[in-house]
Image 1: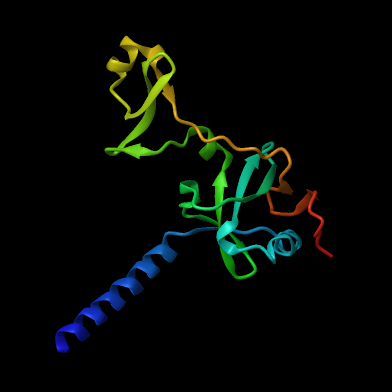
Image 2: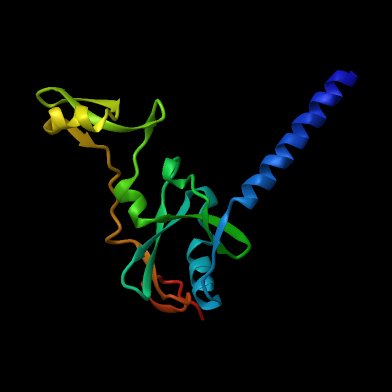
Amino acid sequence: MKYINKIIIAILLTSFCLLKISAQNTIPYLVNLETEKSIYKEILNKPKEDISFLIENLSDKTFKIHLINFKNNDLQITNRKLFVNNEFYPLIFYTDYLFYTKLKDDKPIVSFEESKNVYKDIAIPTIEEREKNSHLYGLKRKSIIIDNSIYWIVDNKGDLLETNSVSKSE
């Protein structure tokens, strides 16, 4: 019985430490109150696990924050979080979609054309290997459609400039 108690205590301590490490590694992002209220009203009745945000750089001083609803996506595993009403939500940069790829054997994955129109995902070979038959390799990319997303355009201080949200801040 003492052995089981020690195991339970060890598991609890490990869990607590992991939660603390996770919180310490979070990079929090804040917007001003008006913007936060508008975002909060939009996501209020949505399941938290379905909510993520994508930030697009429009210029040196303006950014477009898109609401993205998706489940079980590996891009949601990020330490960048948008803080909205006492909760953190994954915040993904637009460049994450442009350059992200999965790993296989601790190397990025590329598509390799084994035969005409038959592709296989493989760990990326060396530059020398890819140069020999560069036409056989393709980059694995995620596609995203944000043309009709709900968005908030903010300046570099987080002030709301424009939104298409029906739940605009009051």
